[in-house]
Image (cartoon, rainbow, N blue to C red):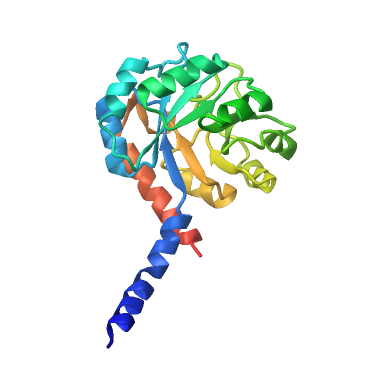
Length: 236
């Protein structure tokens, strides 16, 4: 066998696994509050970690503490700052200080605000799903890098443990945006959620916690196992 034939053989052997890897659903573990949880999330295989800078949240973390955690993370892990109706310059200041890769907006931010921030950073816009929910709500944020769909709750914007009809997320994909699926996802239901919604990523918070703000290593590992199993079933 010639050298060229050997190289082509190696590429052929790896073609299918690489294709499946590209199609695997991304996993974001949100509400990281300490270094131990961050390390365990990364070791379990998380692609993104979320840090909550909303002061009223039980998962709030100070920028200084988040910065110390982010400094220790591998470059392969994307860091996301969660904000709610925060001043634009304040968000960018925190992002620079901490070393964030993306902003996640959970408030009533307008498409225009998202467009302005997008000039500076990657932006995920969170939308709360309640009936009737129309794809036009997703299409309005055409400058966002991704849309996160979460269950509606009067009490809180995220981290409530509530689910919604995952078929809505599948319909929302028609707007041409990457969809992050959130809201009540757990190791027990994430496989079904992925098969139903076919999202770009899943965003999990309370579903892998022992209490608000404290992650459970075993549940994170179980979640990743369920995601991988679902990915194998849906890969083409």
